[in-house]
Length: 192
Ligand code: HEC
Image (cartoon, rainbow, N blue to C red; front, side):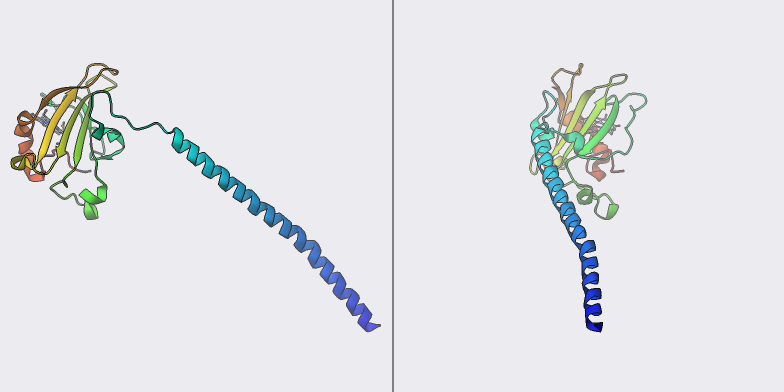
């Protein structure tokens, strides 16, 4: 008699556990499935986003190696204002380089010279204009001009937002002035 009562109690307990556990198990497996579904969906979405992302092209008239320069490391924290009393690159300027911060400033301190292959791009918005009207480029190519730290200088301008950039000057006229900052590898703008 005692045994039967005990068996009954035991069965009830088992039933109780089952009532709680089974729905729990079903619920968690649904959640997992849903998460997996979502993950797959997200992954697919990312893929299509990547496919539809616009290819990076240079502004018209500029060489391809500066395409997407706006995404490079910007040396100046704030836009550089026009130089009072006459600006060789007249306008409001930003300076970019195709290097990582850690490469040119290990442990937070900028090192010189810039590595071979460096490209420094300066864009300028001409006074009262809202499009880039000037692009000045310094490219470091080993062997091109050892007397001037192997920098190649070239500058382009345009006078309308949809016009092609055209070369305006290059070489001696540029390094003749940039030589003033020879000690920091000819680049006036230091990393902020
Ligand atoms: C009379 C001096 C002078 C001349 C000439 C000059 N620059 Fe500059 N350049 C500067 C100064 C100063 C800066 C610093 C940023 C600013 O205020 O525009 C600069 C900045 C630059 C930068 C951004 C990197 C840096 O040094 O800060 C590039 C790139 C550049 N110049 C390229 C050229 C090219 C190419 C030419 C020739 C077509 C040229 N420069 C001629 C004075 C000059």
